Length: 41
Image (cartoon, rainbow, N blue to C red; front, side, top):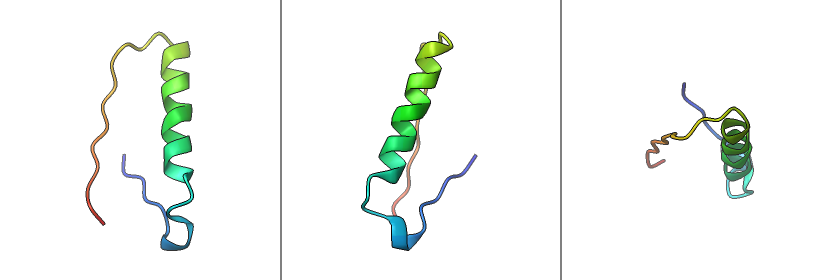
């Protein structure tokens, strides 16, 4: 899955919060390993 942040909403911590929420959910589900790949703009 690809996720993008629109230019007007970058640098506001939106993507970081989304990742934090996904990690929290993974922990709740007992997932012990996840990975994240990122590219430059």
